[in-house]
Length: 184
Image (cartoon, rainbow, N blue to C red):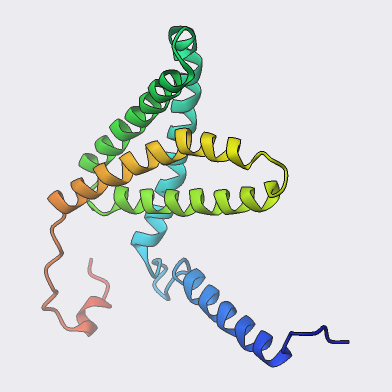
């Protein structure tokens, strides 16, 4: 039995489009015949984003625990700002260190783009779960202090470093058949 207002043909077309887009996205994580990832940059930034996520979790744990006694007498605004900036600075220092150590200068900015995607997905999911409960305001306040500030600072700094240091690779002059030959 069909419900009013739904068109099974349009739903099927929409599902096919979404499935095709998801398949093309996830295919970038698969390997080629040679055993290399189809998109190394995508895989590396994805993995590095989890490292940065762990760094931020640890930085917030240390900042909140370590600075709680120092910021207890301050107004809540200033205490939250100091703790958020302290964790953001720790994350930025790690990302700047990795930026200078890693050879591909796109990696850190790409990992922050992944972190932005995670943060947006978490926010949407939490807003859906909390709608109508009255806790949305508290969520947005917490989100602004402890997600938006470090994320925006990280995006700005890593984008600047990426634009400053990135040198595009030179085009290869070798024919395609020579690239597939294994050299010893």
